[in-house]
Length: 242
Image (cartoon, rainbow, N blue to C red):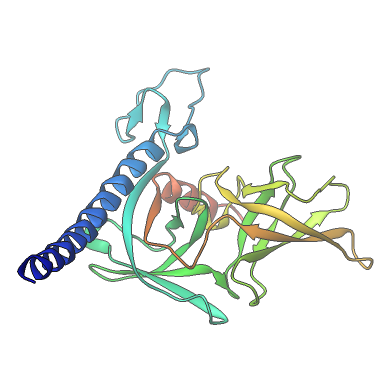
């Protein structure tokens, strides 16, 4: 009887210890993945090599001028059943988070930061009727608007793909070069074409996309920090209006 009781207590203790070790392992893996994402070619931009110029204000790397940094964050709240869904992350302004940062998961994009406090940030999920992201077909690079129709959390809708595109079920959809407000690097996984819908009254397809991100089990995500976004916005704001 004593052995049985001791064994039961030991097993429960080991289960608890395993849970906390697993959490630490997940945190370590997320940090390592963020470091690896920083080394992806899409995180850099090659400068114009026709001229040689020394720019002290920009951080440079052997791969080119660094454009994106990545920060890991823990998901502490997440909704999927509302018409407008949001995610709360345990990382805020004190840890480097800013509004308009893109949020990506292990398998694909997740949403965009819209509010920040000192230690937390609020993310507008892709599963939000107000969300709109520029996405493109990997085959042919046709670009459209990615939205959610408020129905199935596993599926998104890609609008304004011209009928000249040769779209098939299973085609890959990625973030485009003109992603919403400079939040996402180009070429990030969005999902795959599940269904091609033809609108006879227009020249565009409406594509049903199986999301690469499983919004039901998000635990850790990565925030994208576009280091050159400020310069681009400042220049675009000065552009004369017609």
